[in-house]
Amino acid sequence: MGDSHLTDLFHRLLDNTLDEIVQREPAYLAQFVVGVALPARAAEDLIKNQIIRNHSASEVELALNEGLGYLTSRGVRISSENGKRDPVGDLLLKRSLMLFLLPKVSFLSNLAR
Image 1: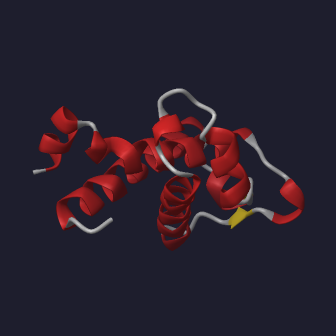
Image 2 (image 1 turned 135 degrees about the horizontal axis):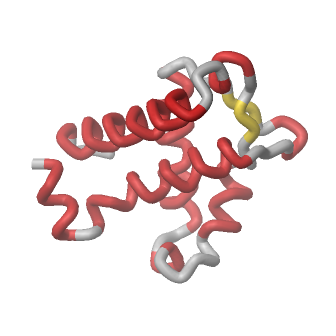
């Protein structure tokens, strides 16, 4: 992500997402492996969205990998084996992408500074 302020914001907002999941179901992340699509496959699907269409598949895949890497570092067990996905995994992928693209929205990127 380059800019440390934006990286910190990205991580804090992903932490907020994890906090929301834990508030709704405290044992979920400890009990279950979160199923996600392979980032390359998810990027292909997500790029069909009107807002994301202006970004390359490789940029979207990078965002998903950044998010998944951070979530894994926070102890979230993630698997993309056998293409098994679940709603929490879809949420985390979409949130990772949204937060990664956040700096590209000029008025929001000023919040990170």
